[in-house]
Length: 133
Image (tube, rainbow, N blue to C red; front, side):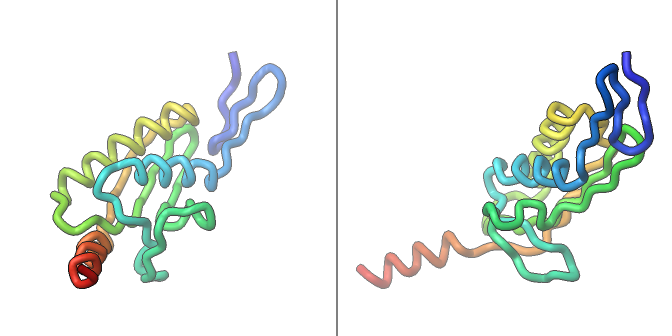
């Protein structure tokens, strides 16, 4: 069939296929967002500001490192208050690994989940409702 090239580029009969790191990051971000208990993504230690998942910057909080036909991912996440963090991290790892491998064909070497903080947004909304009543 096709001959493999460096990074995430493959030679096929009709030409090369290149998957951008940003595309891989977007897939990982969307997969993490599906996990119940994820409040949002963080830009990591440098950015320090949590940004809710939205269309503006879906790759925020995801670091991608492609080597040959494999990829290592770091996700910087804020969790909802009350979730079991080890269980949440494990679910994120499974969702992200499955999505990236299925959609790109790349082998996922690692999915490192960094819990950057806890979101109290749900509790704050409930408190506002109670004070209004």
